[in-house]
Image 1: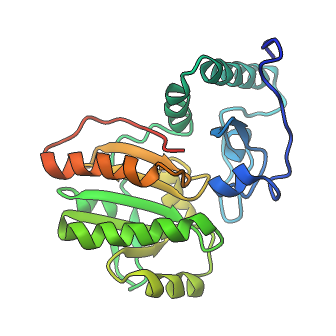
Image 2 (image 1 turned 90 degrees about the vertical axis):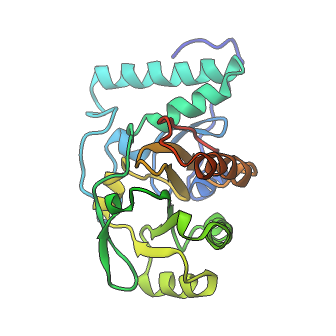
Length: 250
């Protein structure tokens, strides 16, 4: 690893006791953070959760020298960016690392009402897709905020709330307590992969009326609502196709 002259401190935490892991909904290991930027997930190292199909991660096979070198180079770059005051760039690059999601994925979602539809059928409307879990405390406040956004913007905005690794009965209870206006559903591993392998909750994707990906927001930082509402306002005001970009609100 590159020598950072004592400017970087390396800490190992049990993910069950880690505030960062809880904030990002990380329930497997290893996960690598540089400050509060999530730069590598368990899937990057070839580790997958319950119900997920194993595949190749960025740093697999883990025992190979090439994988180790690739990880060291990526980690060193992220540390360099943070130390040079370019945290926004680090967040943006980290957001793109798992996958470059460019448009609404062609996956089908079965809602709690039993109806199945393709997400790609939502072209023409601004779409927010929120991945959450019943065991994720920050997700509750995010869902309540999304319900307010739906109430405010009505049919101009479609919001899908997809529960990850959660008991359906508990999902139904929470959905009933928050709002019937959100499109509630269960996130299968296939749906997660369609969005580039969702590895933490809450994770929220924003798409323009043309179906192009506009922004991705990870976790529930203090600036989440303001950042997301600013991007949303631009989309609703313009009513025209937007340039694809990816930002990580962490």
